Image 1 (tube, rainbow, N blue to C red):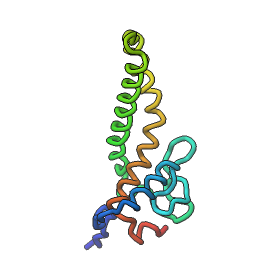
Image 2: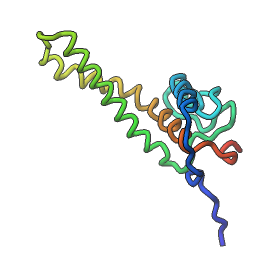
Image 3: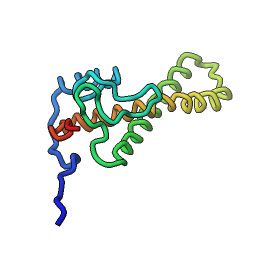
Image 4: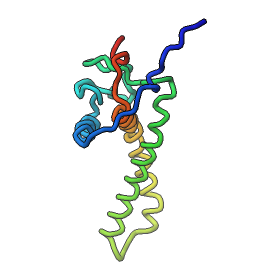
Length: 142
């Protein structure tokens, strides 16, 4: 009978504090390891590293589909960016808003920005996961 190994997604949930949230927010802003805050999470190409060079934390916490949750945060950040740009454009140019130009410029701009947002959304997803499910000791072993 094969041994049943506990997956890291089965770890207990944790009620985070405000100081935890602020600390992790700073690590996201610097694109650093959400566990130790020292090692980089991504390569310059936007690909996520396998482990933190500082604390050896494994970034992919469960299976190969772990970062599919990052799609939600990428979409959320992209829509937020779109709404802010739209609001600033309309308010700053009122009453002569260039509606014809906005019909192609804003979607093109959002697509361009999404190239940068999608890799960052992976760091956000990883940090939110660590925020509610703290790192277990077995995730730090090679």
